Amino acid sequence: MIFKSYILEQNIQTIHKYKIFLFYGENQGLQKEFKENLKIIKDVEILNLFQDEIIKNKDILINEIKNKFLFNKKKLIFINEANDKILEILEKITESIQEEKIFIFSSILEKKSKLRSYFEKSKIFGITACYKDNEITIKKIILNKLNGYQGLTPQIINLIIQNTGLDRNKINNEIEKIKSCFQNKIIDENKIGL
Image (cartoon, rainbow, N blue to C red; front, side, top):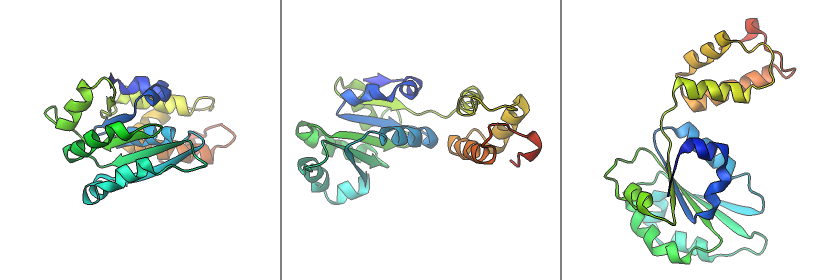
C-alpha cells in the first residue's frame, strides 16, 4: 500500500496496521522525523539494525522476532540503509512476524528497484517516498513549529530557509536553537544569529 508522506506526517498511526513499512528517498530529515515519531510508542522495545548486519548474520532478524520479552508486548525493529539485498530475507520472515513491526529506511530507490516494486504491489506492507522538501513545505514546518511565537516575520522565515538550504535536519536544528534562545516566545530579530 502506497502512502503519501504528507498524510503520514499528519497521522503516523495509520501505518501501525502494517507488519512491515518502507520509507525511502532523499529526504533524510523527514525519515528521521518519522523514526522519532514511531519511537514515542510506550511499552515497546526498539531495536536498530543495519542491512549489512542482517546480511552478515541472516539469523539475527528471525532470532529477534522469535525472542519475546516478558515486559514488552511489542517490538519495533528499524532496519537502516536498506536496498534490494534485504528483500530475500524479508520474504522469509514475513510469516514469523506477529506483534513486531519492522520499519525499513532506505535512500533513493529507483523505479526498477525490486524492493520498492515489491512494497508498492503489496497489499499487506506499506511504503512511502520521502522526497526532497520545497520552499512551501519548509515554510509550513517553520510556521507550525514556531506557532505561538511573536515576532516571527517573513524576513526571519526567509533567513532560516536561506541559511539551511531546504535541508529539514538543518531547519529542525535552527528551530530548536530559536526555541531555546527565545523561551519567552518573543523573537527578537536583532538577536537572530543565523
